[in-house]
Length: 337
Image 1 (cartoon, one colour):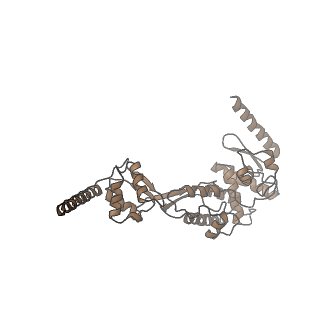
Image 2 (cartoon, one colour; image 1 turned 60 degrees about the vertical axis):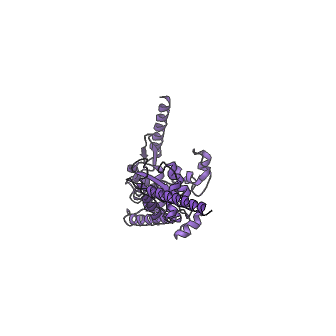
Image 3 (cartoon, rainbow, N blue to C red; image 1 turned 135 degrees about the vertical axis):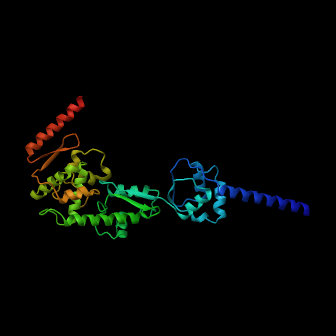
């Protein structure tokens, strides 16, 4: 019996030594990089097993169990940090453990695009793997309270730009930064605005900038677009701009504007209501804000597409109608050809 126990203990000691030897070898053996640099993302809430499985699936490790054992050996199982990581050179398995438990992440970026609605902006945040999601499912009103916003709507109140951040930063922090920058940029533009503009507040200028943003993608045309709408405001003419109608339709918009859409009244229908709509319809970029506060010097009241991405601007309805007919003839010719 004593001999059996000795043999068993000896075998266990040998296995332990072999396991220790293997872990020592594994710890200091370089992992396989599928490419250089190699980037990977660990999502929030990832378990040790799921991380090891991910590394195996991505061919970073040949098998997951040694990695799991190594992490547990150092007591780091609960210290894995989410985020985007980059490996620009060969590292050992032990260095990989240290990297993901120290949170040695690469910097991430979040791009908010000019012309996006607040809904599109929130979706981009919700879909970003490096963002800590604190606002998912939170109502717009509650979100505005958290940000200390006093406006009726969050639309248009965030500056479109590329934001760099450390992985794991909360979506609330990113929204707060974008909101603060919009406030700063709008205040800056408002202080340097052209004289005699028909805006009572910077917010009204922001509304106009959002319309300009949605009306044209040509930076050179934005001051002219802004001037047309400001000329209409000055004489009490309705803005009659399709993007506001589309925004007012919300999820009812099917990709085409119909006559009933233009004649059915709502707060954003600038065909049925005079003046500016009650709020912005998108995030305007800096060029559109500048255009709204520095419009072109023109008497134009109308514009129509030329079919090439630019517009023809007219001072009279007769000239405008001629431009419209020219545009329609161009469309017919293109269909024939």
